[in-house]
Amino acid sequence: MIEIDVSTEVQDALDNSKPVVALESTIITHGMPWPENKQVALRVEKSVRDNGAVPATIAVLNGVLKVGLSHQEISELAASQSPRKLSRADLAICLTQKATGATTVAATMIAAAHAGISVFATGGIGGVHRGAEFSFDISADLQELARTPVTVVSSGCKAILDIPKTLEVLETFGVPVIAYKQDEFPAFWSAKSEYKSPLRMDDLKQIAEAHKMRAELGITGGQLVANPIPAQNEIPLCDIQPIIDQAIEDSFNDKITAKDVTPFLLSRIFDLTAGKSLEANIALIVNNASLAAKLASNFTDF
Image (tube, rainbow, N blue to C red):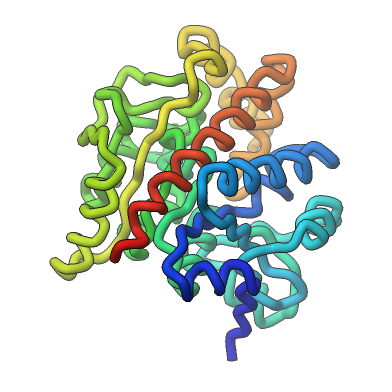
C-alpha cells in the first residue's frame, strides 16, 4: 500500500483552506551542486512563505512519498549520493524498492494531486527535445499536464528544447498555455521567445477560476502558466541561443541520450556561460515560487 507522508504544516494548511504550493526536488539533486542546491531549495521555500503560502517540497525518502520536507530532510537530500530521478515511469518502482529519489515535474504533479495541492512552481517544464523526429525524446511532463489537475507555474519550457514543437504537443493534448502579463511565450533564461503564447492572462483570480472551470466541465489535466524571468536577471535570447546550439551539438557528439540529456545540457551551458545560466535559473525559480504563492491564494475559495 502506498505510504504518503504529508507534513503536519502542509496538512494543516490543506485542512484549513490555506494556500499551498508544491515544489519539485530534482532542482535539489540534479540541478546544482552542494551546498548551493540546499541554499536555493530553502530560498525557494522562503519565497513561497513570504508571499503568503505554505511550501510543500516533494520527494521519495527511503520508499516514503513525502509531501512537505523538513529543513533537515532537504539538507539530507541535497547531500545524498546518486538519488534517483523520478518521473511517472519510475515513481512506483522507487516506492516499492524503498529507495530515495527526487521528483521531476511529472512525479511532483502526481504527488501534489494525491495530496490535494492544486498549484506547483518549477523552473521550466520538460518538452520536445530538438531532433525528436529522430530520437522520439519527448518529456513525460507534457502528458502529465494533460492528465493531472495541477496548475504549473514555470518560465515556459527549458530553452534547450524545441519550443514550437512543445507548444504544438501541448495544444494537441488540450493543455492551456497561459503567458502571464505578456503575449510571447517565455524562453526560460530569456523573458521572451520568438513565439507567441497561445493564451495571455493578467489576472491571477481568473487563472484560478479557469482551473476550477475545467474540473466542472470534466476536462482532465492542468494548466501551464508561463511566467517570464525578471528582466534584470535574464540572458537575452540572442546571447544564449548560440551557446544552447553548441551544447546540443556536444550532446549529439557524445551520444548523450534519455534522462542524461537535460543534466548534460544544463551543465554544459553553465560552463559556456561561466555560471550565468545558473544565476538566471535561480532567479526565475524564486520568481515562479513567488507568483505561485500569490496564485494559490486565489484557490482557497474553492
